[in-house]
Image (cartoon, rainbow, N blue to C red; front, top):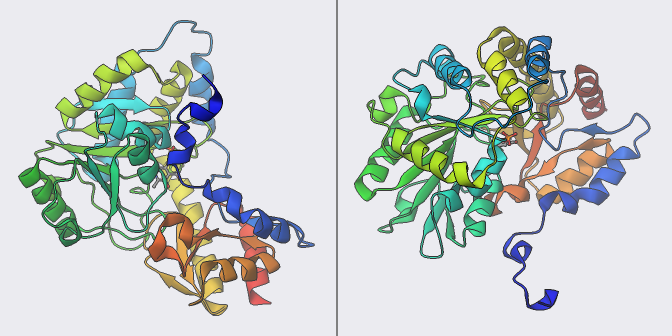
Length: 370
Ligand SMILES: Cc1ncc(COP(=O)(O)O)c(C=O)c1O
């Protein structure tokens, strides 16, 4: 079949946003002190030796891993959720490891059988992969932060993200409870992306699976957890999904055919990471310190930082179009992510990541002062 008459899936998708900031990146890179790249939220601190040892410990094993993952990994996930977030009542059989949560999110609507007749609700300002996942399934996308915006419609799936990338906003128990009630009344699946739950700076951030939210009933609820940020494992591709046992069983049943098994050494690394809170707490404190100095420097340079009570970003504005702010920062050798990456309501913000070394954060602070 000639290429022209074949359906190009990429045409369903938006322009890859990172390609649009190449000129700002080049400008920032030309700074004599080098670029301070605060655009992608990619970890820079090394993987803890405890995790690397666990990775290597099974590197001689030749056989296929199971799709469901080892019992040790799933038990470690359940215990970590209990220790770190006070979540009781999770069952290891209702945990499914995933190769990165980006991959899960991009595939979830399809794994759940959604198609052209279905509506997927995503946050108004959102991590782009929720939209991508819905579009790959051919579903309709609605950006809505409140239930009134959904009106009388019955979505098939609602993506939540608290704490949010990019805004750092946290949804409280009341808000989450209303979403759960709505979902129950209309038989909607709620997938709550909680990859920043362990990185909360002011107040607390509840999980969708918290008893105060769910009343202990996880029907139709999924919590998506990544080890990329809290354990610096972005390069390993490591996450898991848990919640409604029946939904997790269904995802497992499809994945058994489709593959995407988490490699065994990564499973061992995840088990070690989930079993240890010390490295996680150490990393959190690194980010806390970076956040404090960077936030102050941005505010002193005339920025307003909105929300940003949790997560790895400062959602910042100078009250002008985000591309102008991007340029202003690039002239100082600093690269941020423009808010328009995340939806139309983000056009006057830039997202400034905390994921840079202490040395680079100090360089940014210095440049913002000048
Ligand atoms: C909100 C959110 N969800 C999911 C991911 C993907 O994480 P990973 O695929 O590394 O697990 C990210 C990464 O930045 C994110 O910000």
